[in-house]
Image (cartoon, rainbow, N blue to C red; front, side, top):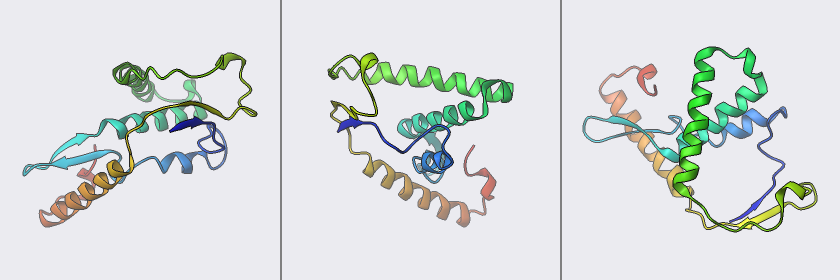
Length: 146
């Protein structure tokens, strides 16, 4: 994938929240697996959740959000820092990005990526399985994701 600037995924634009929500899955990145339906967060979707939470906090302003929300955002920064190190993408990106005009030069380096479409498909399938299990076992809706 060639990294490129986008008119989408703004921080403050009126459509920003809706665009960022398209990165979420039903169940907000959680799956239930096994006969006991144990819940797990899928890392890719946890990372996207963190980006959405960070964008939301920037939009609202750091001093306007509560202490527990601030703690959540600090967790997200640390989580993304660790996963950036874990992925350790050493792709060479051309030029000095500090001197780059992002409105004229819209593309960056080429990265080798995992196809994320099957991940979204798996999440939807797992959610349908969980929803059927939840209904069959009379589990209230509010217990689905926490």
